Length: 259
Image (cartoon, rainbow, N blue to C red; front, side, top):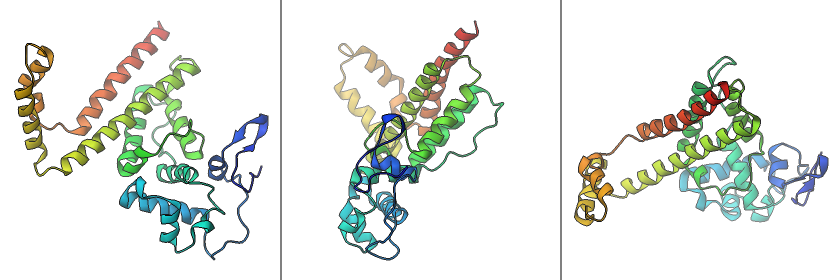
């Protein structure tokens, strides 16, 4: 099925409308037979946009800027990409890539989900601009569906129904993305400070000690006095802790099915 050449969503099987970005990701859209500049292609456009985002951040990506990087007119890009939102989807697809071979069919559900979570977190931290891409809908591009499939595979023998499996994957995926975003934002904040991470945390802890009245905020005061805010924790340790707690909850659900 070929999509509309004007970039609008087209009706697929069963009456479903396919956004232009999804058609392009699956290779369902007709490509221009003649380009305004020899060598211009959708892959080159997306590649240039990914390189730009990696170098300067997602905010630097615009149709005009990508065209400048490629040495072509902005209008020539619209023969391949209908809008910046479509370009974002294709950039996300390219940067995420297909999931690695994480496990065989006999792996336990917990280890399988752990490997999946660490793998997708690595993608986010390698391409930090991915965390800034606006959510335009549920996963529908080839690579996003492949990652979804990988997360569902280890849940196959848990006894959970399909809705529960999907809920687990959405919960885990949301945790991974939020954790990566927090790690990136904290890293950026630390980079903007002249202090080393340990010193920055000690300053923060000292500031709270001056501001927090134990009579008003007794629980916060206990955390401060414990000294846990005086040191910079390893982001991997924070991720490992949160991931374990989520999987503990999934384990309780699975054990309930077994009972």
